[in-house]
Length: 76
Image 1 (cartoon, rainbow, N blue to C red):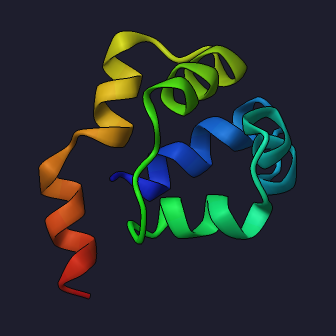
Image 2: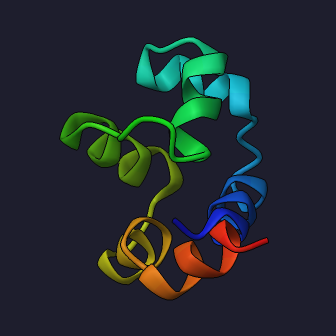
């Protein structure tokens, strides 16, 4: 998961972690765990994030399916 790019998109739309969690109908701590890779986002959550942040297909893939970013963060 590309955390930096998700954070950038959230900042562009002025959406906080708490607000995004509210849109997803989950606790902010649950959102944190999902962002850290401790649990997975559901399909519905991915679609909601896409709508809330006005993400393109490319953006969605870059944030959630970019393996190069995942492996780089996991080694830190």
